[in-house]
Image (cartoon, rainbow, N blue to C red; front, side):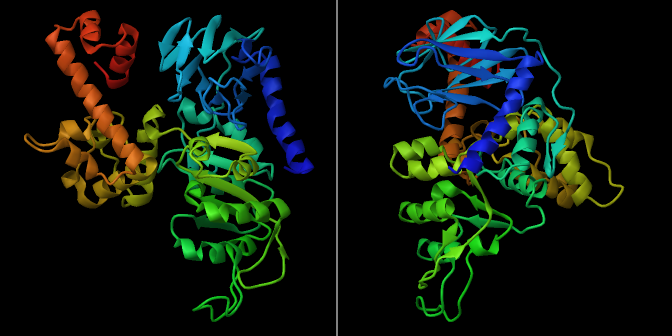
Length: 449
């Protein structure tokens, strides 16, 4: 990281202190037991959707406790409370001695991660502060509290030139946010170039990134610039950076650090001046732990991070976005169908905003004949005698998301069956399931009544 980057990051994070002093809802996380006793972190509006605690250097609250996972738990504001979520840690997350997957804290609780204890307390003078009134950031649209909470951070990032990693599930709008950061920043007059790391064969990625000279390989009949040169003076988005071949990551790191590239088959170093943004659907901390992603490249790219929430977690945004898409897709004067709107918020949208856009496009094209999404899982929606696994596979989701959908469907059906068997008695159902009543309640809340 250059001195310029460090200076810009200090400027970006400085408003968090201003928010706290202004009396906004804020919480202080203080390590009161463990190797990092005394470490503190302020969870305040205007910084990010959530802050992470764990061993990874990319975590906001970095812990050296060996019993803590790389990304162990997340803390995020939720109204006048703070929400703690276990991130599939090895040793679990405990609140007041009780194991939790997800919990809301009022302040005064002790959260234990491995051998580390963290006290969660309201910051002095904390009170609830209204969220920004903006319903969009550039081309990124969303009026939900979950989206409005990240807009102030996006505004500060847009005004800077530091590298940013945008994280989120497939279809959440990562490329849209990247373009908004470019268009609202100091390099808006320059080009915005997107390189999809999954769209180019591995043997051609180096040439696509850095360019090649004539005769560098079979078929190279002319010299060609790579995306680094094409983005000169502007912004380069490395989309799905988590899928980049490990052998190319070292070369990419060098290009970013030294701001120069060498074309394949060439012997000259070419200076480049551009901003690098990255996007990924993958958990890069886990990819680093598995040896599939270089930690030094990650730290260079993740000077700042923005996590886009999935559509199912964005209250009311499905209808807001659907109306926006309808206005651009439907013939002028054609009213947005009320029966369609009534079904949108009850669906989980595994494909997120991209799936919603496709659903609106189908409705515009097919009218009442278009299939309408429902709140049912694919397993429940399968016809009698049908294979619920095939229903999920038919969605063509990435492996991890398809597996999640199958687990969700299984848990929902299991809860329904065990509750019915015990006449709705939660305590008896939890005991028969072999899990704690509290965990049973969490699963029940997650999957509905």
